[in-house]
Length: 82
Image (cartoon, rainbow, N blue to C red; front, side, top):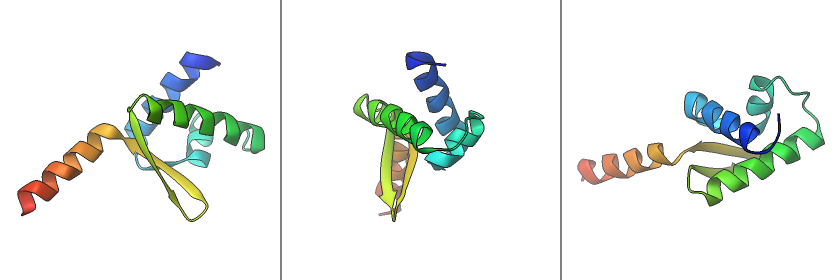
């Protein structure tokens, strides 16, 4: 798997299992967890975030991702709560 196909698969995993960590994505893709795999997934996460499909946040040393749609729902919830 390469390029856009891998990015689409990563996005699908994030939609199904959010919030998700890079190592969890690697496990779902059945890729051996090593620095190369983590860097490859991290690159695709940055591209997805640039395309505004996902949001990411660093919690300690972990990078966590979730779909942008969920962020919109959170904002609506905060608005309705007030």
